[in-house]
Length: 550
Image: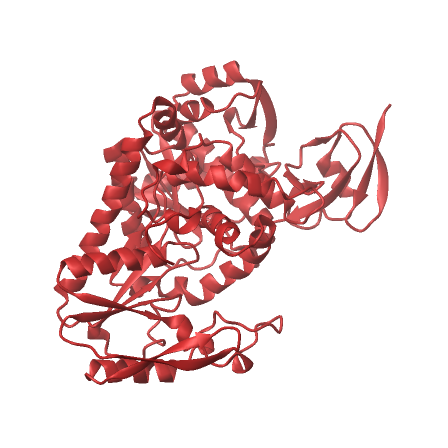
């Protein structure tokens, strides 16, 4: 019998029969007493029932890792889809956005779930977990898979498959239920012991453990702002008739994508105009503070908002928070001993507030500029004095945190939260991560304007996320208004830019697994030419050739 050689991350090697299951290989590594959810084979993420067919290097993926936590979350969603099909076979379950440590799910018919129905689904999930049913990885011929999804009424999945031309389609199967395999899942329902299903706004929240606390479900902290955004943009998807990637791809293939782009852009500009009206309605407002996570489109939003405020008779004045950094030699250090430029203490809060108060008192104030080469702040010789129609716009990650402007009265501040929360799903059961959305924006921007490789962007992304969790997300609910900067067509455009960048990441690199995952995700999209994107679009902030200066 032909054998293969497996190399563990410890450097140890072992010989196995060709076709050995990944789980059996990991048994030798002594990892089975840990929360094992998947395996890396030559740095590519695979399910534990994968049969190994050549010499390879392997590493266990645990639930408390970023990749492992994602596998766990996807598997829980798959389990809920099984329970829903068994209890409510005629209803279309839709996986929605993440709210806190939970995914919002609802039914397409918009008939609210009762507490008893949510309890029934929860009970059914518990039964499925207790039975410890295998989750199998299958491959079906394309035609057979299409026929199955048509028969089961999974029409969004069928639409998605129109963009696939592989002869064999990967599926996940459990308890007679099948779904597209977008990414690996755990090997058995019994691996999903930590979860919670609770009623939420007529739907339900499927709650999961945070990767840093893999064994517990943390107390639920609601984020009403995100739910409001979700509902608003879900309705927009219904109006436009585009709620999934398969339907978007049909627009691209039929030549109707240009009109869809124009409508999407017009809707976003209308929302920004409404934000300007909301600012104007607060007569005492003297400063607008914009904040949001990385690559949420804050800069373009601030520029478009300034235009709309001018329409209303204001003279918007941008204040760059980067010019208020303290001297680099005094910058606090992070846990790794590196300068932490994202913490609030990296800014000269006292000086910023003194300057703002003087401006609001009608004084002439010299604006500073930060010399990033020297690591110090200096004067510009330029002065500013506010009249009756000027309004300040401050954009930065700490904008929603009142500790940034403790001396400024709340009634003269208008706070706006900007994020990118697409209402698109791959199909009914497979949502698009808002984090992936922003990561792709940043990857393309970093390459185009900062000279960073895709590998460098992926390597720094965990640090970026830690900063967001510490400095941005805790203050979301304090915003007076919010803007969703996502343009549902843009992933088709970003694919054109991102795919070649991701292909530079090779199997020997630690970032390869994440690169392959994102490539597989982008494979679901029909490319959309960048020439269709308006020059004032938020997307131009990332792909270039914008009418705005950044």
